Length: 186
Image (cartoon, rainbow, N blue to C red; front, side, top):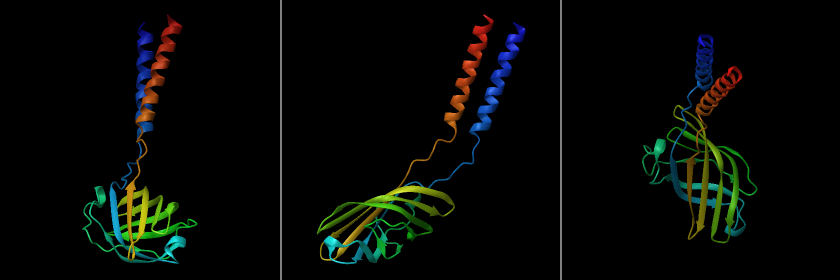
């Protein structure tokens, strides 16, 4: 019985140690929050058939930014890269940058394209200001109302698990081993 207790204790100690080792990871510091922009755009043709933005006019931060973007003042100028071809989708490094953040556009999908509205969604990566590059989803809309006004917003994606799943798996495996040994002895 004394040997069984020592064995169980050794297995538990090994399991706890392995859980600790497997769950030790470098802690990422992702960018969190939403950032909103507005302004006007020039398109490469008539609104209903345009395939690219050729110029961004008066692009600025709008109200409603949250999280790590909350400290950027409303009306701060935003530098956008032009041209931006949205149909077909083309990745654009540094599509926008503001207050030390930079957004690399990875993909876009035209959701709606009529004579009065263009709506596009996609994915990209925001980096800067000491944060880790963070995947984000984004949306862009422009309306043809006496000039092509636009809005753009990006939202931080969820961060992968920091190791708690591995720790739980380790604890479960320890329990299975203890049960197996107990059944084999008894």
